[in-house]
Amino acid sequence: MKRSSTKKTLVRGRAIILALITFCSSSNVFAQLGQARSQSGAPQANQLPLSGRTSQTGSVTTSESAVPGTTTSVNTINPTVQVQGPFAGSISSARIPFTGRLSLRDAVQRAIEFNLGAVGLNDAVQQARGQKRSVRSALLPNVNANLSETVEQLDLAASGVRVNVPLPGFSFPSIVGPFNVFDLRASLSQNLDLTSWHNYRAAGENVKAAELSAEDARDLVVLAVGGAYLQVISAKARVESARAQLDTANALYQQSAQQRAAGVVSQIDANRSQIQALTQQQRLATLQNDLAKQKINLARLTGLPPNDQFDISDDVPYGPAPPIALEAAIRQAMETRADLKSAVTQVKAAERAVSAARSERLPSISISADYGVIGINPAQSHGTFSLVGTVRIPIWQGGRTAGNIEQAEAALSQRRSELEDIRARIESEVRNAYLDLQAATSQVEVAEKNIELDKQNLDLTRQRFTAGVSDNVEVVQAQEASATAQLDYINSVFAHNLAKLSLARAMGKAAESLPQFLKVR
Image 1: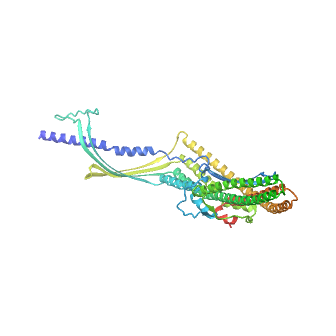
Image 2 (image 1 turned 135 degrees about the vertical axis):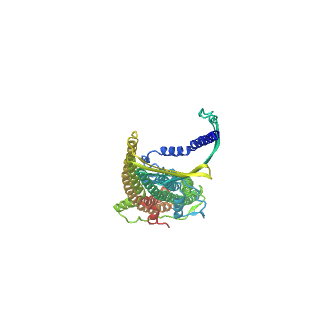
Image 3 (image 1 turned 90 degrees about the horizontal axis):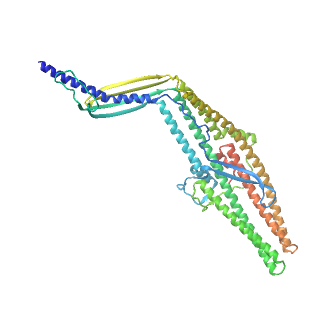
């Protein structure tokens, strides 16, 4: 009986030891859970970049400066369109059929969809929405499931474990196992703090700001493509005018050559007429080259193949601007400009970021729970669970919270400064567009009168030369004056249309108001 009792004791002791070893081996599940909780740390505010303008690297600007004319000392308006950064490029629009003739409306629609500046800001909107979803995850519970099964055998002697049991006839085994541990467990964790809430609100404001920036990019695209289309129209008109001037110069040269053959005029008159014809021919080649480049530039903005193998189908003649007072235009710009609304939204996001940084000083609550079954195998498992609630009270974080608050307040101050600056910039853009519009209107009126007078002078000097009253010096001079008047008129119409386009952009909603400012023929 005594030997049987001793044997049962030894068996029970071995079973207890194996159970303890099994439990110690399986405790890594709980250790990992505790480690994850300890690494969660305190909630921290998201820091915004110092400037809200870093996301947009491209720009579209127009300018109409007074410069000396090429043939006279009179200053004339020199309109230019400057497109920089991604707005100067595009992605391919090959999936949309193209007939080879491009209208202004089609060019704008293609550019809004395929211009790289608009595409990039649309991608920025998607990125901001994804960031908002990521920030929102801090407010929602995280649920995970884990399934593990471990087969393990231990060498206690190799690990330095020496166990002496004072039982007769019993020796502690140096090799333990193999044994199994099966664990199926679901875990849930939830954090409650104001910092995460303000981070989420700031992310929402950033999404709105990105959407408004994308809307403002539409106006910039309209300004860039509309300006490029007007440049093609102007370049095409210069080519047609130069071709007409070349025909006139050739006709005068033929007339001079015939008169020279008849001995009516001198050789110098014939040479002068030929030089004028060659000059007009050279001018025509230069203008044709400029037209081809302007068409390639327009194609690059709209996603078409970068060549000049297409033609424009619309003409934008001179026409008065919509009747709107300056103060009313400024007021409308302040109400509708998307970039101004984006700047206001960025200020709100910065204010939320400051609130998030200040909320780091407040207590936070975290809850974690898990439930699962653990055992030797699925058939021999038992349910276990844990529920932990933690209240974290920040006392001293080494100055991190104060540093975060200082950074957030600096970003807020910069956002407010940028908002104040953009209000002034919008008003200056409207006023500049009005000044350019007035100057261009006056220049168009003067250019129209110059064309009529120069045409009369050219006809009179040709009649005098035909009658032999004078040489062809006056004819050549009249030709140059007529060509200059034509170019001045073309340039002034381009400047006037560009000023109207700039005013539409300055007032906001350029894509919608474009038909009111530019009358297509």
